[in-house]
Image (cartoon, rainbow, N blue to C red):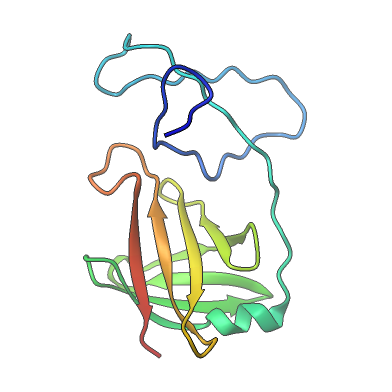
Length: 147
């Protein structure tokens, strides 16, 4: 993996909110050893994008997510895309960073990338879990559109 220093990592921060102005000191440490190695944390700002309602409507539907088999309903409310995870009874706002990529900023951050099949119809999404200290951190999972 190509890094910006002597060490590279699969850890990512996908949804970091801070005031526009200010100076920040961020320290990154291994959760295994508070004094382990040197770390470089790079934050890139790409901002929230606006996605046409016609494109968002393509994503609306029900999905079966990951090996945990969660039932997820993607819907639009007031022009904003949301997902509802039935097993957790949790509504999550999906923040667009491109026409197909959305960040879920709750419970840590995850990245959803909607995909299309050979017919051009949305067939599901890929989910990157970046929550630190979970067995699924730093991994991609698949969700299939069921209707």
